Image (cartoon, rainbow, N blue to C red; front, side, top):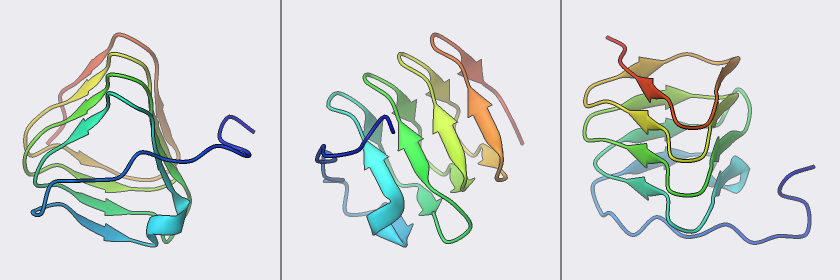
Length: 91
């Protein structure tokens, strides 16, 4: 419902790999660097000004809240929601 009739920002980083890109929505201002985004199991949503740092691996369904950060090398499995202004440190 958050993304209906809206267009996702594009991933410009050449080192980020996506699976099922049609189910990945990125708000303006969100950054993704050298990460793997796998939306084959569910959608991935990256809110405004969120950050996915280098080496992170995300499997959907996943939502990263506004101004939140997923640390370098973080691995996140599906069915995860991170609220706004959070720092997610996972291994």
